[in-house]
Image 1 (tube, helix red, strand yellow):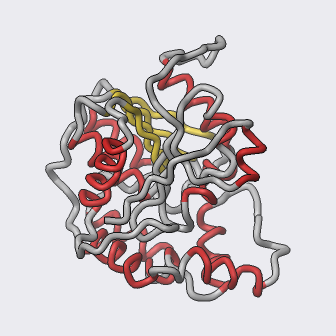
Image 2 (cartoon, helix red, strand yellow):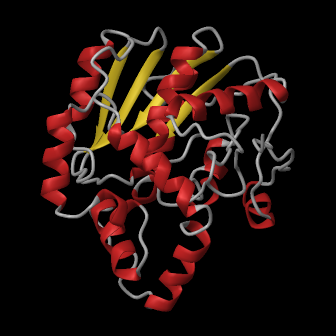
Length: 285
């Protein structure tokens, strides 16, 4: 499970781990420079993020896995599938900017009317409110939260290793659209909200056309960019049926897998799911 900008893995996957853990062994790392993950190297590319995750999984003895990703995490997941064509079985990408042209990126930035840095790496509560309002469609989750609470969130989730996060963003924006984006060999599911104001839904169909017959698009109606927060049940159902091969989502499946749980969730999550969390992934070097 690979998160995007706007927080670490614990925050972004809060409403999904309990359900998905009923059918899967989950590895939920923080990407480099998010949470407690870091690197001494100067590489800030999505390829380096992907190689770091692959190396981390190898150290844990994981040799076959599927990948679920959201937003920025989609770039990383795509590179993982490209690099490890044999190890990665299936790919799920939710609301990502993969395949966007330079013109589409510029048009979207103009539509939002703000520097992407100010939105994705907010300094002030008003910036965080804008990020959340862009990401959700049906609800206004920050409406009643005071600014001091939001500032504390920014200090904990954004300002730690802020310089490195900014370098990641600058690298991503500086890269020209990849006109030679490889066609993945894995079956790929693209999940999008039809009201996504960050990466419009037409990008899902563009990416599907590029990937060809091994890919499919599932659209969640009346849903924005943060489908993992607004509609985790629908996303979980789509992921489960796709990865297990039950496209209609019907039937109860019991699977025996050769993976071990590796996750650094707090005790609260342990109590929620009844599972034992262990093995901090340790992407420090």
